[in-house]
Length: 305
Image 1 (tube, one colour):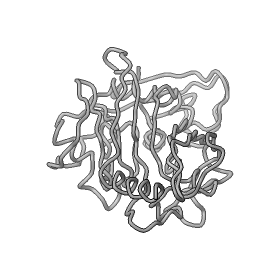
Image 2 (cartoon, helix red, strand yellow):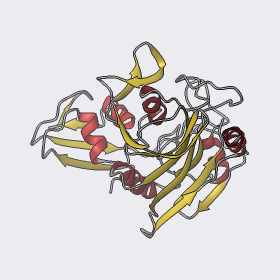
Image 3 (cartoon, one colour):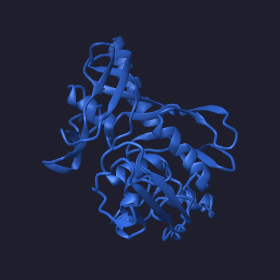
């Protein structure tokens, strides 16, 4: 188990490409961006030599990693209400409302889920300084379940489950049109849209992404889907559905504008994973919030007329 403020030694058993990707794959507690920062700081060597993040590892390479103690978070706790579904010594399971950003970003240092969690758990001790406890993310205007780690060991065990794809994520999404077939798999590499850096797109240089869907109901002009993302790329569900011609209702970024809906109809409905402390398999659910329920009720009534 990799913990902060320790040294580690890896020996490459098979060539797998870039140095930063190899280390982040081997060490789930270290995000790829964190690895890149450690490389820039000279904390990582290959065969006792400094290398760039893009260095292609070779069989037999010896990789040494020095993980310094985490920097104190510069973020301030804020008294923002949290809908906590579950809490133990290791983690929080939170039902995030739409409109709440998960963690600070440049130019946006307050009013986030992280600020709220720091008020609830002042001794949060894991993760990067600007995103302590964050293991996975939801878009600002996507509501639903998110899990936050309280300590480094819990963070690592949860990250391993995400990496190994043993965590089961289920979303509810309303898309424009009647998608066919009723059940399917959407695939396509996702990366930054070269024409608009604020968007993601299916691009040849992107990272592999797989999204399973199943139709729950057809309505007048819409389909309600159950979504099981196999991977967790930025905007993955939104990009994939838009790419096959069925954008999420209310998603103004990816072509799903509809009257009466101010944000994308996408909700992280269910999350199933093993508790870090005991290994017990737990399932959590969060019902659709009021704004989405009201819109859905309206189209149900319209369909029934």
